[in-house]
Length: 333
Image 1: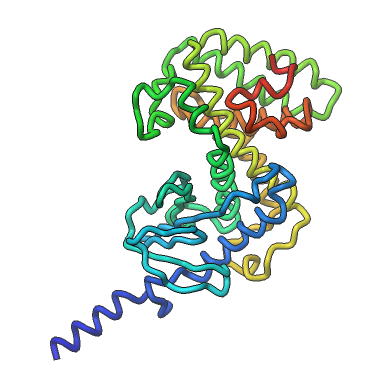
Image 2: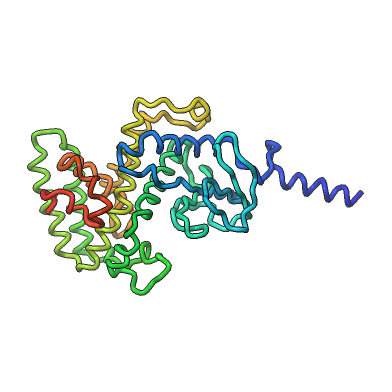
């Protein structure tokens, strides 16, 4: 009797409340991931040329298991779950190794750049937000796939000998320097005001003031610190901008019926407006001394939109002229 009870308890532990094995990805997560992949395939090339050549490889991290999809050669610690009818690909699983709150992209399995992401619940995102975030991370896959990306990053000389890449998060930028923080406030404020009048006759006047404040900040920073600032805007800020560019293209796009039926789905056109307002609010409210490198996401979002006005073709040079967005328009200098 005790043996039978043990077997029954073990079976229950391996099955969730919906009767679904822990080695099977949830239906809702499959729907969200499929939507992100379909959006990337349909609209990606309208924003970034050749982005569809980059595999959409993803690890979904749950509380106890990781699911791997679209990987060309999984490592031996993954077990094949089967070919999924929704995602139209093989899904592999293993015991959880990565943080279940991750929203990141790195060469996680056999040197292949993988989107490593926790569930919507564990990343505190609703279905629409989570789906668009996958496109942000897919853009990182696009960046990292360019042949000389890693050589270029190394040539910036910012790692301080760190071979793990963690310097990108921990670089000793002078966030607490009062002179720099005060100038950053003037610069970010001028950027916000310029974006607010981008379609008016006042644009040139505000843009001139913004460039002046930006150049003052640049002059205060040491060359290495400015390189780090520029690199973060180029990498993370333009990834945030890319989220918005997808949302612009999705304004009149009808999502799949399965996605729209999820209880926490927000229509793309409404989310686009909410997204824009929230990023402008952050641009105005964040302080570099408190929010540190996270500020650069919203800076890049805003400066990317300015570049759209100054030079609509700027994205053609993004991967070949890297790390300094002022290279994409002479008016930025």
